[in-house]
Each structure stands twice: as C-alpha cells, then as structure tokens.
Figure 1 (cartoon, rainbow, N blue to C red):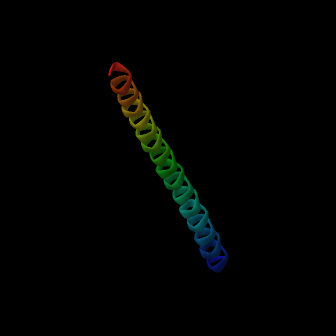
Figure 2 (figure 1 turned 60 degrees about the vertical axis):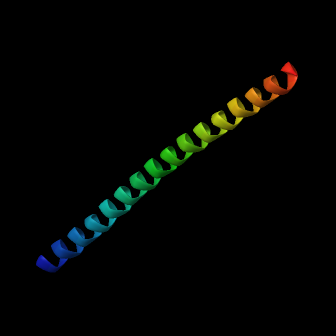
Length: 57
C-alpha cells in the first residue's frame, strides 16, 4: 500500500510540475507578446513622426 501511495504521490507531483511549467510558459509568452506589441506601436509612431516631418519640408 505504501509503495502504491508513493507512486501515486510521485505522479501527482509530476503532473503539478508540468501544470506550473505550462502556466509560467504561458505567462512568459503573454509578456513577450505585450512587449512586441509595444515595440511595434513605438516603431509605427516614430515612422509616422518621420513622415510628417518630411512632409512639412
């Protein structure tokens, strides 16, 4: 019985570790996408500013 309980506990620990790893990976992906969006928006803002400056001449 103790051997079965230990095996069950080890399986639960493994499953829990995989869930935590997936959650952390998902959060990292969300942060990465947010930063990428911010970079794109900054680039577009700068490009628009440059075009407006060129047009003003």
